[in-house]
Length: 232
Image 1 (cartoon, rainbow, N blue to C red):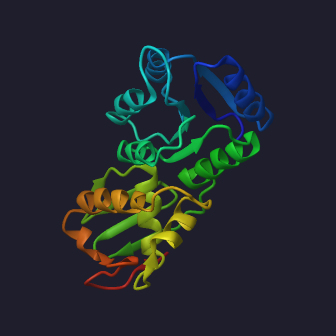
Image 2: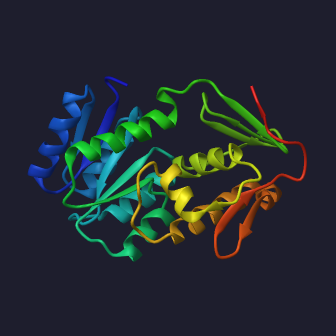
C-alpha cells in the first residue's frame, strides 16, 4: 500500500501535521487542504486519491457539504473527523456515505490503523475471492458487484456489508455483531447506523434486496430464495 495518496482536510494546521506525520511514516503520500473549497479543488485535480480524512467544522464549506459533492461522482472511502459526539451527526454522516466516523481527540495510531483497514478491505490487498448467490455476484478482487449481470454502484461500507451477509447466509446477525465485524472496531454510536446502510443496500439491489430479512428486535439475516452461494 506504500505510496497511496491520502487527502487530509482540516482547518487546524497542527492537526494536519500530526496526521500527516503518522501517515508518512507508514509510506503514504499525504495531500492537504485547510478548508472545504480547497479540499474539492484537490479532489477534482487529483484522480488517484485513495482515501479522504475529512473534518466536519471548517470555514467556507463544512465537511458535510464536501462529502455530498464528492459522493456525486465517487465512492472513494471517507473518514469523517469531528470534535462533536452527537449521534445525530454520526447518522447524518453515514446517510451521506461516510465510511468511518472518528471523534476528536483520537489516537493517531488508531486513526492510521483504521485507514489501513479500509484500504486493505477496499481491494489493495485482496485475495481474489468471488462469491455468487441468487443473481448477485460479488468480486472482492475487483471490488465490484453485479445483479443479474448489471453493475451496481455501492459505497465502501455497503460493499463490506453485502460481503459480510454473503459470507454468513442463513445466520441471524445482531446489529452489534454486524457493527463489530463490518466496521472492524467496536462502535459506540447508535446501532441505527446499520438500518441506514441496510435500507440503502436493499434499494440498490432492487428485487434482490428482499434477500436481506429483518429479524425484529435483533438484526438481519441474508437468505436467498434460490441456490446457495458459491465461492470460487
